[in-house]
Length: 522
Image 1: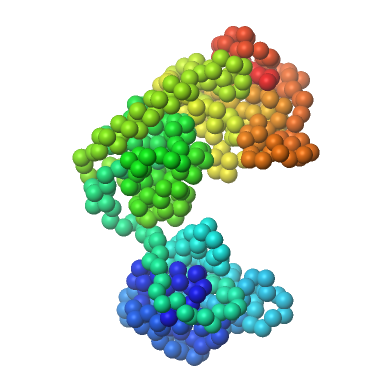
Image 2: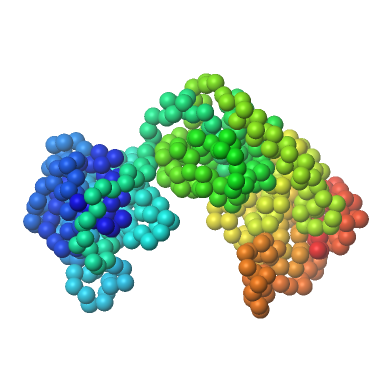
């Protein structure tokens, strides 16, 4: 019989699937539900050792002899401290030792309750990985717990063998082990063979996040030969192509037909800007989802990860075997792209969105486009970039508004022979306006400042319109202009207040030999 505690059930299921069959168990009360759950499953070979100091080394001996990971399970409090010597030996001998410790709920640590001490970060320098599991109360907690256990077990072998620690808080009552069967949990693999799944997939879908230009020069040609839908954004730096779905954000709905849903998702590159893409992929839960990255880390962005493949995007795509494609699946997505383009044609009204769309339609070949976060990067994504050889960048590591102007200044300084354009919102600009406080201003940089008197993107927050008195604190409404600061820095400044002058002022900015700032007021 198994414990009613979901985090313990998940651990048992994943230990079976990751082939960890030998467990050394030390006595205690808090780890009783773990011990009972392990002993109840015929898959496990359980070894009872009383002294934790001996148990750790007993587990090491088993691991060396069996040439596989072995777990050691202890109760809460000082019991874990007694594994210190064994953990250090496993670390320096590179032995895959899985340390499982029961713990009191976090709220009771340091409250003079029995057998409580901070059980994480005790052996940080001697562990390959350490995770502290939640006590799941909802589906998000269960996904998080599942991911943490998978990550910890995968770390036992990543690049080299070594010890890993899983700490499990267990609230009272914890003696109820009345569950007869446990569900088979989602398992995440690393570098599992993938070619057969690829060949069997009927509706594969690529998602390409942010990539530096250097990685896409040869990757684009490979992706064009795949003949399956490829979601990408301007930050993917793949350029516009009929085979790419650049505007998935305008296409996706929660009610997408079954034939539009992929059976395999392959995620290349860095961050995806679109919340809608992430939400949709989290909802549909594709049976196979692969993350392709050079570090092999488990970034479970779409909450359905099944394989972390440690390769560069180019090497991975190049390794795929040629296969017959489902033309209907690809054609449905291409048709959806074309319909979205017609429905999202450039508007003639004077808005920040229309200005960005107008500007992108004017972009010449061989330039760089730098996008600030929040509204700017999202507005730019609504229209294709038809110009060739346009490099696109944005600070999407943390996605903050700070530093967008300064990063653009540095970028343009390093590319003196290439015209660089920055699209930035007012809060981003004023927050980082000292980026212009520079003795060597790059004259090849042109700035489009969208000044709508506050954080425009916050208007989309659900419920903001129903609040009273908080909009000022959320949107940071203001009546500030960049004109004085720009002129004091000897910039060529242009102010724009109406639709009639948009095209003229954009063209004037683009033809200027000086660092020029066009401020659009809405």
